[in-house]
Length: 492
Image 1 (cartoon, rainbow, N blue to C red):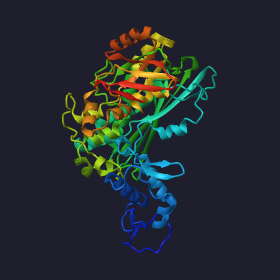
Image 2 (image 1 turned 180 degrees about the vertical axis):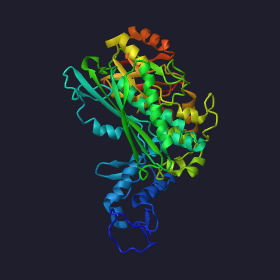
Image 3 (image 1 turned 90 degrees about the vertical axis):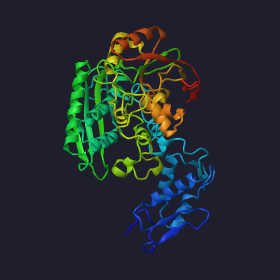
Image 4 (image 1 turned 45 degrees about the horizontal axis):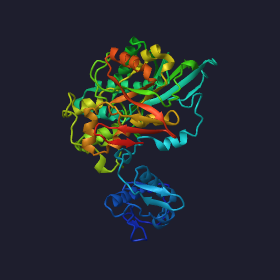
């Protein structure tokens, strides 16, 4: 028997009883004999009504108070369902009016899976916090609380491999090859390392890992590969002059929280204030993009360009529905089933126009740009006006830096085969693709035009493709124009 949570008001309902809204035009009912939480039942029914056209754009939803009263539940339960639908982009709150169905729904498959491409709701909170010593810098920078040196500052950063670890889990389950998690270890480190690069860190870095796993599904051999993979990658970076060291970590068995595994890291560094890249990006600069594909000098294999952003979309939109039945622990059951592993491919299928299989392309370890950025900083010094790691927000990440700048990207790299395949399989608009995926370059260097040739030559010396992908012009506010290869222009 299903027991109501403490969000449900006491009633005399009996098992198998279905409670419905008093308004027959609003088809919301609760079934007391199922295990689905009350808020989820409300959310699923409204989601279906919107998808089926029973609720049209602009239609008003009943108030939270009305739904709670009709169904005999707490208002907070209804509010939770509405918030989830709002996050999915299906409804929106109107001041003093309540909630209505959005005029344009379903445009973001990424958001419908419970992920925000630009994390706007997070930034609404974070942007009101104290911004540190250099407000425009890529990462928050504080006084040197660790050693107390007034000429130095501290940088600390936390990130991880995201849901890419779930793709590795599926590979492991399908093949029995636990070594795939060595790439996940690199992903987690690089997502921290390359953010630190973007504020100019070029000294010692200390990094710690946190692994949250379901021990029944991810046994000791997985942890061994993650730990060894981390140490091997850090050693390879030290060989390149990047002084990054392991500070240990934590492995937590949280089987009731995750069915698979999540790999995160935290990095900290002390640097001189005068060495900080403040990202005071303004007009008159050239934007040099560093490619996310190919095989750079320090890499042991070619890279598809995947990185560690957009994996929620990549794994669901490319992979076929067989994986949903075989591995239900690998996705959130509250996601619309039409968006779960809804693609045409299996892991071992060839990726069109590519030497990779689909699984190899998605799992291609995230490239670090440290060997190149270290050399650029050493040779150009203060000529580097800005560094932007195109991670969360992808090609729109630049909008968070500088003031009064029009970013014009009119000479982008050709879209790599992996991202073309994702777009074709999902039908995602190109406008959204540029917000979710790096689309060919994942690091941007902002320099005066006179310094461009030096940046390009340093990149070429490391067998890394680079090109001027755009420039900056004056504007009354930060904005971005992307001119795509198909001749279309996208404004952000």
